[in-house]
Length: 210
Length: 291
Image 1 (cartoon, one colour):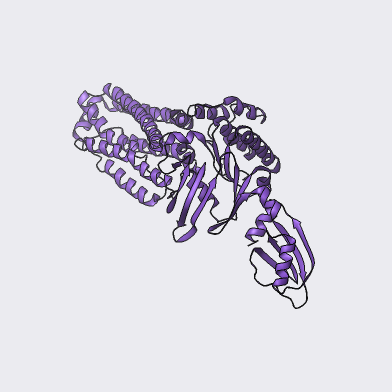
Image 2 (image 1 turned 45 degrees about the vertical axis):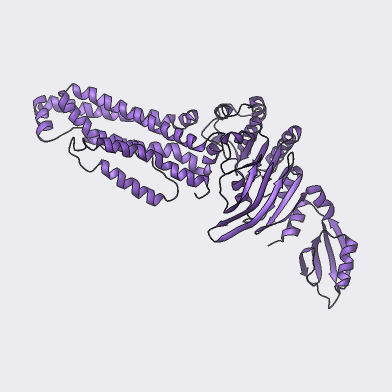
C-alpha cells in the first residue's frame, strides 16, 4: 500500500520539500538582512517586547501544503471510484485506508519536522534559545493545522468542509506567540482524531451510500 | 459459486428490484443482460460488496459478502466498468503492486499479454488508449488467477478489434482453467461469443435465466399478416407483439404449430406466417421490448 502511495505522491513531496525549505531559507535570509541593517539588539528587543516572530510569511504554508497533499493523494482514488480497487484487495479495507492516511500523515510530519528543525537551527544563529522557542512555539499550531487537513472529501462535502474550516480556525485564532502553549496538546489530539474522520466516509462508500 | 437470495434494493423511494434470486454455478460464464436502469450495475455492486442491499443476502463461496473474510477476495477478480486501474502507475509498477497481495500471482501471463501491446514497461497507464488499458486490466486479472471473475461492462469504450481480442483471451483463459464468470456488457453480440448462461432483467424482475444455447434453440421470432378486420388479442407466452399496418411481429418460446393453433383458438385470422431463429441481441429485444 505504501508503494502505491509513494508512486502517487513522490513528485508532490519532492516539490513540497524544495519549496518549503526554500521558503524557510528565505525567511532566515530576511532575518539575517534585518540583523545587518538594524543590528541584533534591535531584533531581540522587538522579539521580546513587541512579540514579533519574523516568520509570519510561513503562517499558511503548512496548511496549503497539507491541502494539496490531501488532494494529490486522495483525488486519484475518488475519480472513477478508483477506491473500489483498494477496497477489493484481499485485506481489511479499514487497514488499507488507515495505511493511506498514515502515509500522508507521516510524510507531512517528516516534511514539517524538517522545516521546524531548519528554522530552529537557523534562528539559533540570531537569537537566544528562549526567543527561538518563543518563535517556534508560535509556528507549531500552523504546522498542526497542516497535518489536520486530511479531512473527508466525499459526499456531504459542504458539511465536512464547514467542520474543517471551523476546526482549522482554531489553529489561527491568535497571532500572539505562545498563545497556544496550553492548547497545543489538545490541538494534537484534534489532529489525531481528524485522521479517523475519513474512515466514516469510507464506511459510507463501502455500503454504497457515497 | 454465487447465490443471491431475495435481493431487494431501492434508491430513495425508487424500487430497483424486489426479491431477486439467482445462482451462478461453478465453471460457467453467466451474462447479466438488461436495459439501462434495470439494476445491472446495482447487482454488480452488491456482488462485489460495494453496496448493501435493502434486504436479502448474496453469498460467494458460501459466505455472505457483507462481512466476508477479506482473504477470500484473493479468489475474486473484479473488473470495474471502464477498465479502471491505478492510471498513475506504469505497467511494471502496477504488476509489482498487485503481486504482493496474491500468492498465486503469475507475472508471465501478464507480461505475455503486455508484450503484444507494443508498449514500454515504464509507460504510464494514463497515457494508454482505452483498448490498451483494457488489456492491462485483463492481464492483471489473469495474473491474479482467481476462481471467480466479476466483470462490469467489459466492452465499454472498446473498438470492435479490442472487444474481440478481450473476449478471445478471456474465453480461452476461463475455459482452460474452469473459472466462473459473472459479467455485464451493453453490447450483446459480444456476450453471444462469450457466455454459457444468461439472465435477462427487466425493470424490477428477472425475465429468464437459462443457457444461451437453449434460449437460441427454443426462442423464435414470428411474423404474419392479419386478415382484414382481424385484431390480435392479448395472449400468454407471447412477448412484446408489435402490429404495424396489419403486419405482426412477436417472439415466443412456442413452436410454430403451437402458436398457429393458439392464434386460431383466439379467433385470429392470419396469412404469410413465418418463423425464424434469432441471435441473442434479437432475442433480448424480443423478450424485453424496444422501449
